[in-house]
Length: 216
Length: 318
Image (cartoon, chains in turn yellow, cyan):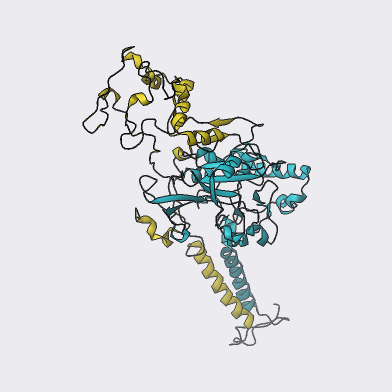
């Protein structure tokens, strides 16, 4: 066939190829990356710098009168009349229903189940370390330090507990937290919490294991 | 074309160049269709949006920029960010301070594995949300072992910490002897005098050698165009730190350079609910990091045997 010169043939073949490519791209048959699954934005609670609890000093600073009313012992108790403590037959403190929010778990084996190890029985609005000092609620850190010496020393040096603000003291303030900003004084062990979501792999199909829960 | 075609019906008449009318039309039709097909075939190029601007293309190497050059560069970045995200950032180029060398201490006895540091870091440093880029990886380890091969990083129980495990967050260790810096063919990453290994995102060519060289898996690559929702952009940016990256460049932890060089603590330190993370100037004998190094059981630099000598230390209480 003389009429099909080499040039025409090449052009025809090329045309076919490009028409197919064009159709492929227009119909999105291949080429464009597979669309990635949505990743929900992380809950802002996970990036909040709030501590686990709010200490008395912070409540005072925030003027949270509702929460502060818990510290007005003498709206219920009678002045000059130390409350009596009751124990069950296993020497567990019986927590009165008015204080049902308190879980006594400070130290194991009932070694520290006496309210007046820390509270002053004659003035319930004061704290009472064993060395005879009388401390206000806002000074609770010193009370903790009277037993937990090494941790108190570390805390004073900045090695225990949260530090925020400025590491360079010439540029700004460093913010320290009280013991009770993180630890519940009645059950100081740091509570478990929900972890923030784990990383999402780039290609989820490669890792079906992620769907299975709770590997132990 | 003026040639008489009639003397043989079967053989098309030829002009002086040997081209008949029919074959000319056929060829040109094929050619036009071919061109159109090429144009359609190259259609995906239309989706390319992020062309490097001429200003960025001719920009000099970071260390050669004069303060006046830097001012221009910062203006350009601010304009680009505003164009892309509709929010005007505040970009700075903070220099290392004299007499400051940063060190980071992480208390393995305290970490509860809650991953708040991971997400605070993402928020602070404008990391891509999809695909996800995170500088910190929290490894769940078996108690009594240090076998990183058995570490789990995608744990997701109802509550952490889990019994029988401890948690070890790993991020850039800011080595004294960084292997990633050695392998970079274009010097786009280097160690600054305050100990932070930084990346110039405008100089990086995306070869990923540094990712391969890092023994801590601390470097992340932008395989796709980063996506950050506008309302989660952190506008306090720095050139070597958290300004938005492009597709095809490396990034990694830089100790929140935009905060730490202004005297503040990194975001991961401020968010940790357990007070696990400690940061400061190791050259200052009164800093908390100096106290920890002197008084605590600082037991490892991770993969110490490699001789990288990290500025990131793990320690235990007691």
